[in-house]
Image (cartoon, rainbow, N blue to C red; front, side):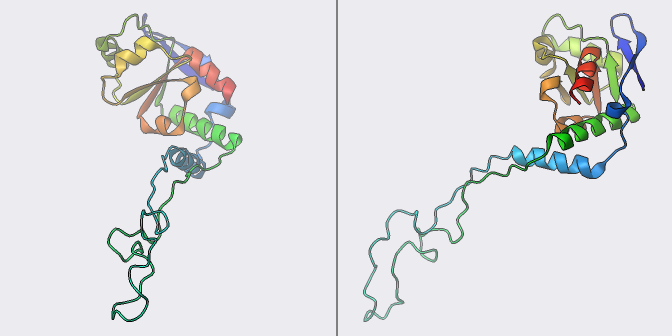
Length: 204
């Protein structure tokens, strides 16, 4: 298939040939959901920790004699029913990571790119000509493209592009090495450079 490539400086368009196996795949909702859920789960911190009755300080001595006091028997003052006692089913640090095969992950990324291209939400530009870190540069660029909610993607991270866009709401920047499914589906549009497009095609 062919995608339109816009040269922002001259406002002229050319076309780029891309592989149908990467950018024209049928949408697979279950695959995208599984990979996206796994990606978000893997990002969870999982450091929550509570103390059970054995981890709480104190409680080594039997509070009172087993018999003769008239009180309920007790072996420790750190049981779950006691004030300052341990938690019954104490949470422990754990990993929420889910294993996803490389083939599945690449397939999900390819399916998302295909859906973006099919719905005309994938825009290809020759390059981002950002010479200095000024927010007005990105504002002018988005005005030219008539876009608001957008992810800007380059072959390698462009520092000026990143610094220029970080104050703008709903504008993200990433390079081809840091592509993830959540970012791709989290923005209404994706604007990618021609060089990055070729690199993504080679990666997938």
